[in-house]
Structure formats: structure tokens, C-alpha cells
Image 1 (cartoon, one colour):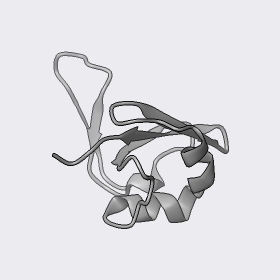
Image 2 (tube, rainbow, N blue to C red; image 1 turned 135 degrees about the vertical axis):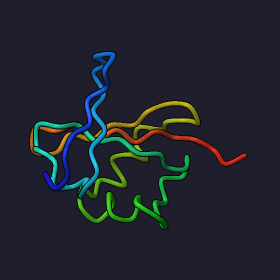
Image 3 (tube, rainbow, N blue to C red; image 1 turned 90 degrees about the horizontal axis):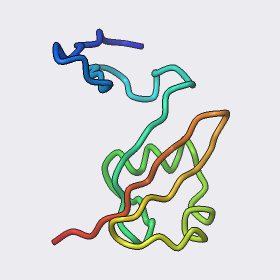
Length: 86
């Protein structure tokens, strides 16, 4: 992946990496926030929609604000965190 990992000295399981998110290994899961209506019409959500599709599959999961919809693509999990702008 483009960029270099910056390990947390506390040994957490989260690694911060700068670079192209979609260049990460296909064994890595991805997550981002979307609105409850699953429109994905702005920001990085547009890129997720183009790359992974599945809008109807997400809608059919009928998730509400605060819940997580999931797609599985090529052995990887894509998490869509539903939330409402306040």
C-alpha cells in the first residue's frame, strides 16, 4: 500500500496509514459512514459505491441509525456505519 504504517506505541490493533485506502490488501476490511437512506452521493461514499456496488443489498438489510450494514466482496468485509447528521 502507498504510505507507511504508524504503529501505536501502546500496541493497539489499529494501524494508521496514509495513502490510497483502496490499495490496501484484499484481506483488510474497510469501513465508512453512510446515511440511513444509503444514497452515498458525496465524499468517499461515492468511491465505495462505485468500487463495491451493492446499494440494494445494503438497503435490504434495513439498518437504522447507529447500526452497521455489511457487504462481503472478494473475501473482504465492507462495513457501512449508518448514522444521521445532527
